[in-house]
Structures are given as C-alpha cells and as structure tokens.
Length: 110
Image (cartoon, rainbow, N blue to C red; front, side, top):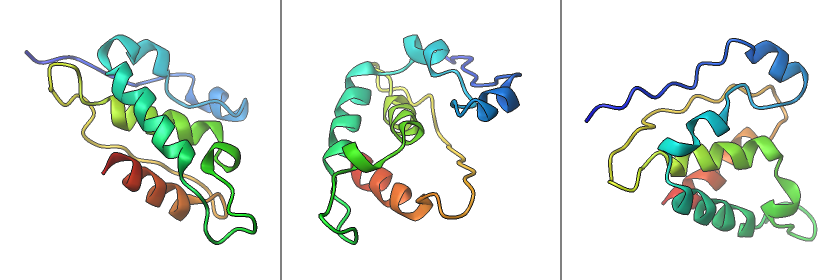
C-alpha cells in the first residue's frame, strides 16, 4: 500500500524566521514509528562531544531542530516495516555543527 506522505509546508519561510522546523512533524506523526523515534532521540542525546571541553552530551549541546530531524529519520520506518522517509536534505548555514550533527545522526541510526 502506497502512502501519500508529504512534509510540504507553505509557510516554511515564516517558520524559519521564528526558528521553528520548516516542516510540520506533528502532521506526519500518525505515519511515523513513535517507538523508533523515542529510542533514536534517547541514543542521540547520550552521545558525547569528544572535542569539546568537558565532553558534554548532545542532550545538552544539540539544538532542538536536530532532535526533530533525528525523530523524522528514525520514524520513517513504520511499524509494518514500510519505509516512508527515504531521503532527508538539511540545509544549514556555516558554523552550525553540520558535521557533528551528521555524525551523530549516522551513529544514532546505525
């Protein structure tokens, strides 16, 4: 069964100005695997930043938008094992921890 799942959000520019996610994760919640989402955020939050003094966990260092993307990526595999999120594109300006976030996301989803 094909699911018509879209994250299109016409007010994406306003959301970015308000420092919100440009997609509406709540609208897709029924189609995503909440159990996998919670487990992924728990793993992501437990990761440490080895190159930062004190080696803080991502729970303390990551931005809220990063956790929302972790939820979306992990929740893309539904309970019936159908993959409904196949590709994620994240556009982030310089000096916003893109590499650190990508590494944390990969470790979380591995």
